[in-house]
Length: 140
Image (cartoon, rainbow, N blue to C red; front, top):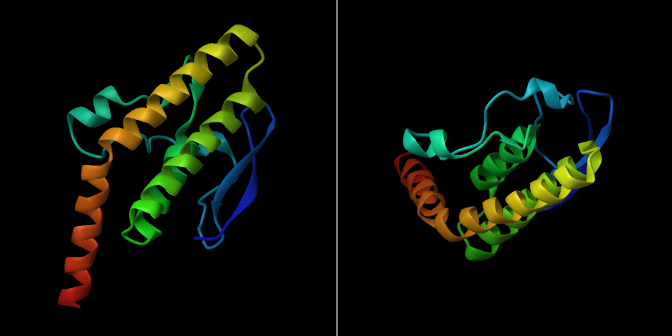
């Protein structure tokens, strides 16, 4: 999957470089316009998965990650690549919007923890999605 860097504008006018597929469609280029995209999409997973990291919204990283899972091939390589882009985008949000060094460190630690959880436990969701997509293609 080919990607490129898109420049988004943060709530205080900061520029935040986000990596995403070249053919993705964004509803907005302003981070504040992305309300809620983090979580497994159903029930308890949405409750325990954060939209913020110590007050910083990371929703754009979740939006891109969801889109990449939808668009990518059903391979382990695509799964892990999408997850790596997810981490990179969270870290870009942190690096470009955190003013406090302490908060930057706390947010980075949480980002890596979040990434590890997605990479370790997201495989079931990913393969269920790819199975549904395959079934829909077969029925079409």
